Length: 211
Image (cartoon, rainbow, N blue to C red; front, side):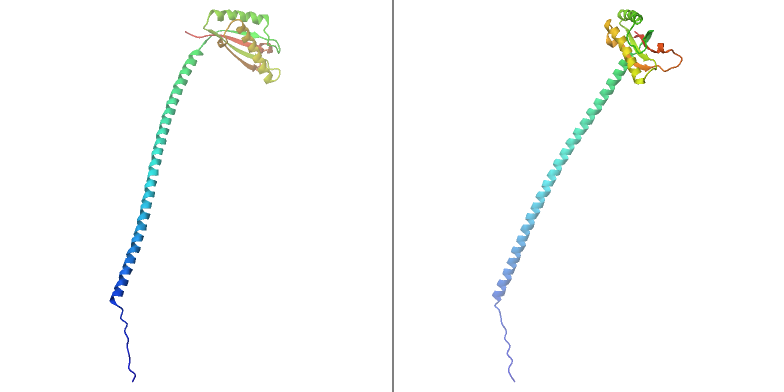
């Protein structure tokens, strides 16, 4: 029977201990590096968060400034609107008093067919009117021009305006101020029952402003 040999290899205890120490140091070094990296990343995140917070704070401040400016603008707009309404109200009251007038006298200045020049009769009547206007500064005059319906409507409107202008020019040449004369051409009179020669006219109304 062949003898059975068993061989056992024994490593020195010091070698194993040394390997174990190296492994722990490596692990600690690795963990330390990871912790340092994490700390650096965390510091970077904190910095970005702080910067974002600062930007948000600045944006909030700018928004507050814009809101304040809008509020002030709205107040100025309301104030301007109030002042405009008050001014319009004063103008309305003044104009109402200015144009509150009473009728003193009415006369008609007649014209020939398709004519707008003043004949002797018209000039005589207007000369009397001028004397009244010169004697009383509270008097003013309203002129309304008309035409008969012959011809086209646009032409007759222009004709009525030329007749009004002839009367107004006569009054101004005699010294009556333009602001005291209100004039308008109203075109043709189409009503039946009135002869055409009476439609070719300027109606003159002498007005007085009450005390």
